[in-house]
Image (cartoon, rainbow, N blue to C red; front, top):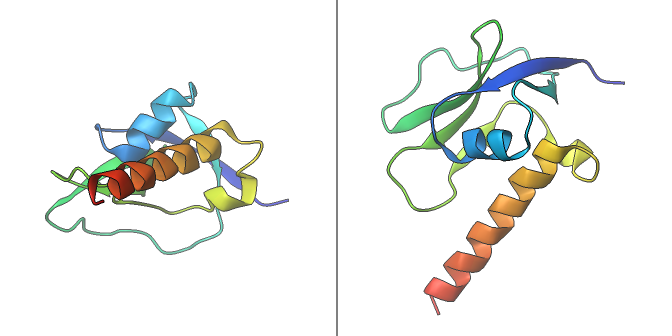
Length: 103
């Protein structure tokens, strides 16, 4: 079993919206990494933080595309975890929309 910790949605980016749609805030995510984001680059927004303040999810500001990153592994629990399901649903929807728009 992998360790888990709680994260809270912040802002209005793609992952923050997924967290809110999963109807859990805070939500538990798996944790394995020791690295983190020390300074957020211009053009990026925080979507979620761990309760200790560490940035756990980011998205690109001012873009219509699904451009986001997380510090955990949603693919490990893509069937049973509501947040993981929502992230992959939103990404798939964005891919389908992009495909239709670029035809």
